[in-house]
Length: 315
Image (cartoon, rainbow, N blue to C red):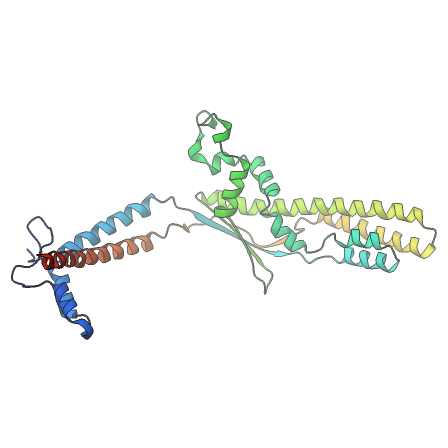
């Protein structure tokens, strides 16, 4: 057995040494650390360090296995080019002196990509998504009684809400990033069920396109109604002709929107079911745990040596 241990495995000062390895280190002073003494001490206590390192390994393995694995489904989309119909409409009305109409119509359709990116994380959009697919029991399975098909806690105040579901979705499940150079948008869903992750990613883009297309159609109709009223207010022939032309243009835009499925984002690479988990990184966790165990073992060796040195100086 190593000379640095009792039979019980507790560290003790070697009998033949008049002072501990720590005292050698301390005595070196400005000459630096005595690497020989440090190495000797580590070798003397190698069994103890190995035991602590093994404990670190076992704990890290337990932690790695206890963490629920998650899978990341990714979808890549490109913002659909902005149609300049609204811009032309706003410019033409402005040149005619219809400033109010210009301001009203000019805001429609601007920054469609930015609006789409904000919409997909919005409460209204995700609330609707979670309600339509009844996702709260899926997002909070520990609080859901599958047999009774009800929440385990009957108090509504203690049950998950759409607001909590939105927070969970935005903070831990849904990630959206845009490459400023290419304009491409990468959206990912990270979830414990790989099939659901891929399904949600594709559905979210589809729902976003549908919602923005429906909103655009409503806006086109409002613009046409406004222009139709303005036509009746003016008797200037060239102004009437310009407005009729704009009404025709807006009608064509509405028709195009009706048949355009990828209205806001064009899917470049759809999400597929991931085959490998994204988390946890079990090998990394085990390696880190083993290293920390060995480090802790070395620390305890020198901490015990330092404690013995302090006790000896007080005698």
